[in-house]
Length: 262
Ligand SMILES: Cc1cc2nc3c(=O)[nH]c(=O)nc-3n(C[C@H](O)[C@H](O)[C@H](O)COP(=O)(O)OP(=O)(O)OC[C@H]3O[C@@H](n4cnc5c(N)ncnc54)[C@H](O)[C@@H]3O)c2cc1C
Image 1 (cartoon, rainbow, N blue to C red):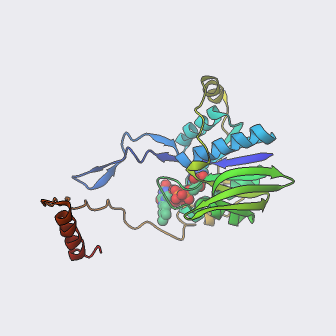
Image 2 (cartoon, protein in one colour):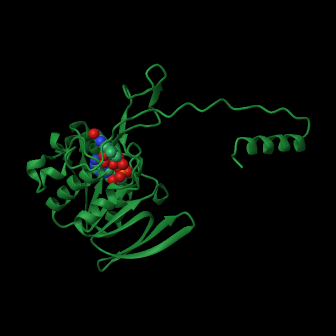
Image 3 (cartoon, protein in one colour):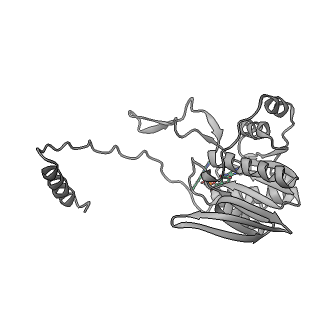
C-alpha cells in the first residue's frame, strides 16, 4: 500500500507573543515544528503500514528549512520524504498550495491513501486537504478519528463531527484528513533520528513537476492578505460584590442583560 502524508512546518503558535509597542507578532526565536495534526497523520500512516505493509512517503511544500520537519517524520519511521521548494511557490494561498501539492502527488505516481492533518495551526483554514482531493479527482473523507479496515480497495473509517460519529466506506485512492483523537503520535527514536540524518531528501522545484506556473504563488492565489493585525486586548474583567449567592446571581444576570450578552 502506498501512503503519502502531507506535512507542513509551522511556527509553534503557543510560543508566538505580541509586541505591545508595535502590536505585531514576535516571530523571532519562535521554533518551527511539525504541524501537530500532521504528526497524527504520520502516526496513522505508520500504523497502516504496520498492519497492511507498504511504504510511507512524506510530502511538504515550503522553504528549505522545512527539511527539519521532514527529518522528524523520517525519524518517527517514514520511509521517504520529498520537499517541494521553489520561489515560484512563495506567497501561495490555499488554492495555489494545493495545486503545488497535487502536482507533487501526480509525479509520485500510484498512491492509495493520502493523509493530511485536519488543519495547520498557523493558516488555520482546513482547506488544503479537500482541495488536493478535488485537483486529483479522488474521494475525500475529512475529520477522520479512526481507520477501521482497508481491503479490496475499500477503506472504512470513522468521521468525527459535533453530534457524533459517521462510519464511512470509501473507494481508494482516497484522501483523509485526521483529527487529534485518532491516535497518540510516537516519538522519534535515537536509531530513527540517526537514520533520518543520513537520508537524502530530494527537493523538487517547479520544473520537476507538471503544473501550470500561473496556478502557483501570488499569481495563482485568488485571495490576497491585505492586512494583518493582532486582536484588540480584551477589557479587564469586572468584579462584583454581593453578600449572598442569590444576590450575586441577580447582579450578574442584570449586568449580562445590560451588555446584551443575554
Ligand atoms: C489569503 C492568504 C494569503 C497567504 N499568503 C501567504 C504568503 O504570502 N506567504 C506564505 O508563506 N503563506 C501565505 N499564506 C499561508 C498559506 O496559504 C497557507 O499556509 C497554506 O495555503 C496552507 O493553508 P493552511 O495553513 O490554512 O493549511 P490547512 O488547509 O489548514 O492545512 C491542512 C493540511 O494540509 C496539509 N498542508 C497544508 N499546507 C501544506 C504544505 N505547505 N505542505 C504540505 N502539506 C500541507 C497538512 O496536512 C495540513 O494539516 C496565505 C494564506 C492565505 C489564506
